[in-house]
Image 1 (cartoon, rainbow, N blue to C red):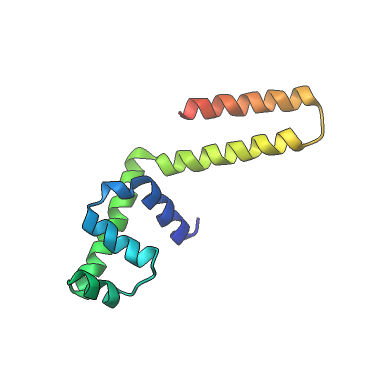
Image 2 (cartoon, rainbow, N blue to C red):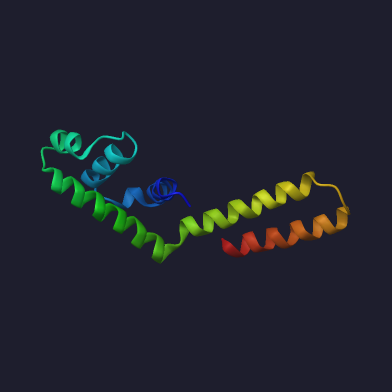
Length: 112
């Protein structure tokens, strides 16, 4: 998965667990595409402090995912739903397709 997409998903799931100051710095870097110098100036800290904060944010978000696996589950469930959509619109034996949809639905419910 693309690193930017991965970090965005991690932030979507776990960003609220970061302190407000860390969230502001992370958002400025990732979503506003500000440079370390621009963020440092707006936050009144050094470029090195911004760099360290971003590194700590990434580590924290990855640590949350390694313990909770919410993004991993989200991606699996999204893939399963995509498969169900394909089965619904495909040709072929309806009972076979319904059986596959039922198995996938059971898997998704097992994830929750």
